[in-house]
Length: 513
Image (cartoon, rainbow, N blue to C red; front, side, top):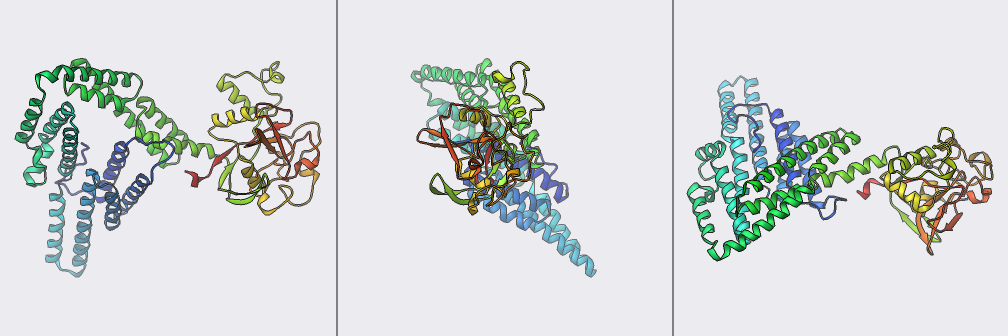
């Protein structure tokens, strides 16, 4: 249980809000069930997270009325979340206390010392009776009781016994005992020592002699799964399976492995918390590093699995140009394109060289003598196939644009013939020449969104296929000016690379997330 200060002291609302927000934010993330897909949060989780963030901001501003309203929405979406319910009660009490303090201040200004003293005394009583640590402990105890009852109902007798033992331990803690003494009836009656011991005895009686061998075998199987999961870095599963095994047979080696798995989860949560802090600061590189460390320690860290795709998407979009949604004609059909991001230039030889080195892939034959690209590597990469372009894009956390997206980035939505307008201007496109320009070196021919060299220089592979062939767009320094028209398209095998053919990358827009 997280300690949040002495409840009998009058602490500043902002300090309390910061501690509460930090605990609850991390708790909610840790308690989230592993998603069916790590690509996106489900709608309910997003709504709960948004409400909690709104409550955090309101508490930091001292607006307990707004915090209470936000927490009511969150608690309505997750009614079984004891922490949310406890926090909602705290916000309601703080709202009352803030109102009393305001009334006391008004009485002071009027010179009514009696009314001021009465309001301050009532505000102090609310704070003292809140007993925040005890309330949190009682909420967590209630959640443990619910888990024990669920295990019992499902027939998992050994697991139910283990969880009831945890209930007994939690119920004996100083915080719960003190809270139960001060607030009779606020601690689950099922958690009383006599009730818990009786429950454990009843459950143990269910383990008939004829069942014990089968249960022991089941425990050994669960322990084996838990140990294997621990070896593979799946610590959440390891803890669950080892806990189940220990509920039947508390072997020292299993208990040691369980403690180690829990330690891994604790360290994973620590790195996750650091990643969340970096995320809030929009330090995407640091956030990615810390969240990846969290997943290294526990591959099943649900919050990290939810957060990492968004962080990677943020990094992928870094330095890219936003392209608004558009409706245009592509491949002879009208297509609606959602907002997305496009690289401002074609992928350079230096960028592609870094990819080959990182992946341990062979260099193109034309680089092998020098063992690197010629010059400063600013020329666009060419001679790669669509498949090779896709592999680079995936490594960079990006993708190839579709033909329709490429056209949207080039400005085709308004019917223009070239990225810059309706008339051919030789200075704005590299066509029918001896060599490509350095990537992005000519701003004159940029499209409306700011993408350069979308006419000429190198033809660009897209993600669109037609008739088993891959579509390329934009013309090339090897082709005549007519290939620079936005309607021009080239179809060829996706595993063939040609001189004068390169690519640029795209990324999903924010709405795709």
